[in-house]
Amino acid sequence: MQQRNHGSLLVEIQPFLIITDRDYILLDAGLGFRTSEGVLQLHQHLIDNGVNPMEITKVLMSHLHKDHSGGISSIDPATGSRQLNFPQATHYVNAQEMAYAIEQDGKSYHAEDVALLQQRDNVVFTEGNGDIDGYIHYELTGGHCPYHQVFLIDDGEDKVFFGGDVAPQISQMKNRFIAKYDYDGKRSMELRQEFLERGTNEGWTFLYYHDTKFPYGKF
Image (cartoon, rainbow, N blue to C red; front, side, top):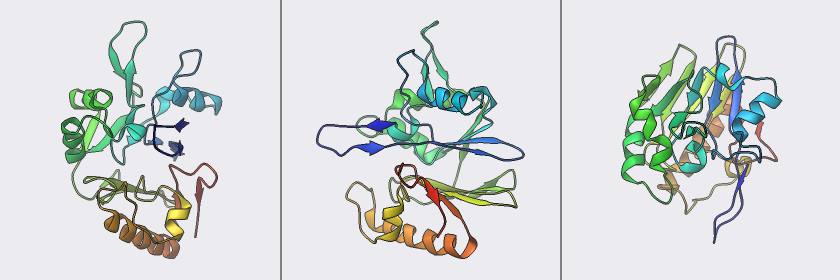
């Protein structure tokens, strides 16, 4: 998926699916675009790869900027009501990021897409750092936005790291720079170096949400 805004560069977007012995895990939810036939692109991509969207068990959200959260919910064409696009899944969202997204509705956040999370019981609002089911670690980082979080999935065989927009492209991992679009660019730069060192030492596979040429890899 791609997004173009006036006065900005083309942005490549790719949510990830991780399949473990216990879960079908979606990492961020994309823009929420539909195909010409009216099917959610994210649903169609899953179907094309042999996965029923209703099989998704966990949706892990790094943050709620609209290019990451537009696919969380949508209007049902038949009923006209808004619904979660992965109703069988437990959604994991930082509690402060949730509140911030509603307060900052506008350029980066689209409150209408995410407000439904506050009304459903299949949502876990995380605080700080912690673990999910003993094998998914989440860590509050800030940097790109005040309450950004990252995830490390360790099933005993592989360690997969999703850095959201703190580590969105491989080029940003290799080069030290401060991005103007980050809430705290210096913090993001420092985090990238920290995660690069940890990941190199521990054999992480990095997933890059905004890098379709090099979507994943190890250092």
